Image (cartoon, rainbow, N blue to C red; front, side, top):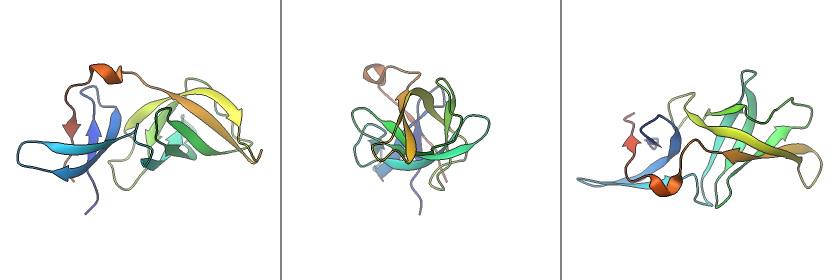
Length: 122
C-alpha cells in the first residue's frame, strides 16, 4: 500500500506517513534527507525530482526548461494525490555536471510553527 500524504492545514505537502498508530502517525517530512518525490513545476508541468533535507531542493530540471522563481511545485508521485502543492521555486542554478538545472524551494509556512498535520487516506 502506498504511503499517505501529510499536508499542512492549508493543503501544502509536508511529508508522507511512515507508520500509523492508534492516535498518532509518524511522518517522514520533506526536511528528511531520505525524502524524495517526483514533482512538476509551473503551468507547463516540467518534470523534476524533489530531494528533501535541511535545505530541500528540486533537481533534474531539464537544462532548456523555462523555470522561473515563484513557479509552484506540485507533487506528481503515485504515493500521493496528484497535484498537491509542495512549495515554490526559489533560486535556480545549473547542476554540478551542467546537464540539468536545480532550484531551492520556498515554503509557504514556518516549519517551526507546525504542530499538527492532516494525513490523507488512500
